[in-house]
Image (cartoon, rainbow, N blue to C red; front, side, top):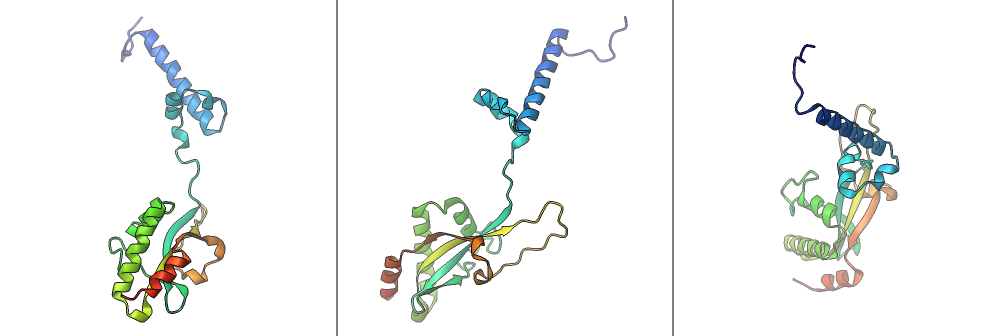
Length: 188
């Protein structure tokens, strides 16, 4: 009998055992990716390494951007505020500090109140007395993503909030009415 051209690493029983383990691992990954229930019974560390085929089980169906509206003390209404002068780093894309704050901290009231304080203070420093603001409203806008095979994909265009359907807007934070009234009464 002639020896193999490339000898295997280790003893034959170890190579066969490794092949069996590898086959079981691939089978478990496949079972998990087709939503079989039995892989969920595996111990946590083993389950973790078999879920690689399901890294993105809930892929985004919407692109989300964050917008700020300011409460006009003179008009007693919200109007859309251009935040680019107050968040100049990556001002026109989703890496803006405003978008990051909205994405990561929209449910953190302390952070949203700090954002409100910052914007109200900065805007009121820059505008005349008649144009002062009393608070903000932070909303997310959900833009549906095109289907995977849809071509060509349209470039993103910023749409005025008033032109968007209500079902695509979600308000995450707004300055309470009492604080808006108090801020509007205080003169600089």
